[in-house]
Amino acid sequence: MNDMLQNMSTDNKDVVVCANCGKEGDNLKACAACKLVKYCNRECQIAHRPQHKKECKKRAAELHDEQLFRQPPPAEDCPICFQRLPTLDNGSRYYACCGKEICSGCNYAPVYDNQGNEVDNQKCPFCRIPWLDSDEELVERYEKRVKAGDAEATCRIGCYYRDGECGLPQDYDKAFELLHRAAELGNADANGSIGYAYQCGEGMEVDKEKAIYYYEQAAMGGCVIARYNLGIEENDAGNIDRAIKHYMIAVRCGDSQSLEKVKEFYANGQATKEDYTKALRSYQTYLAEIKTSQRDKAATAHDDCRYY
Image (cartoon, rainbow, N blue to C red; front, top):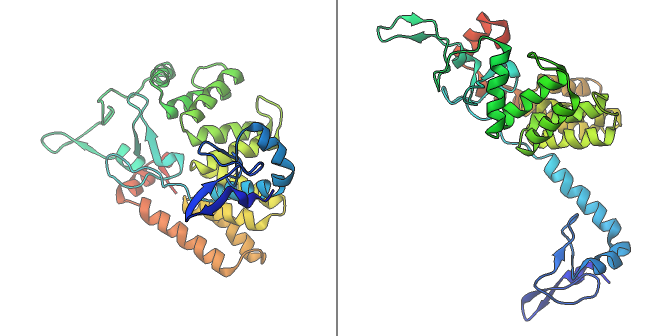
């Protein structure tokens, strides 16, 4: 029975019917993969599967790509200067005491007393808690943030367990438990870390399919490194058009490596001049959104404050 049975018009009123048996109903369930057809029940869906499979697979792939290649929302603004936070980790600092993240420029900006004299600032600009003196204190603060459901803290301490850093033992089971929890809380970088682990066999068996799945989840959440890695995977598979799509999105998010890839494709005749021009302008737009004089000062004074 034709899939178009799902939408019939009677007296100018849409009537939804089961794609298998043609029965009308208000409580029909849509195919979860393609959303094109609806069924009375599981039995009708199974019976109709041979006829629907090809179209379903095609539409599901289209829906997946629509979501995958959608430009993710930009990074949040620094809560102090209200300028867009840079993509590079060096461009911002996360405070484990209160869970706030500010840009490198505001983090290293001079602080003055009531008389206008510059003073040595060693406290969080929000909760005024003194900076950390030891890894033990850092882990303690992260653990408090984890209990509060902080996705960023959960991801970071998961990485510490993965790498055996900050005085914590290397524990892959604990690490990936925390990374999965952070991913469920919406942390895109956590999905990227899980994807990398599956790609490289870091604490688990290599599984390319799972690696790509987690990279895609990370990329859709705004993880630039995951997006770049997907571009590499598509390039290696010979899917140049899809690789360029990934790189173009990553460039708009501030990834200079992806810009170099588009440039390389253009030089090799695999990308058009329009592609490269668009990528270059996207990167320039990103720089215009994140560049500030205070961030430049911090980057000049501190090597770990380079933000692009």
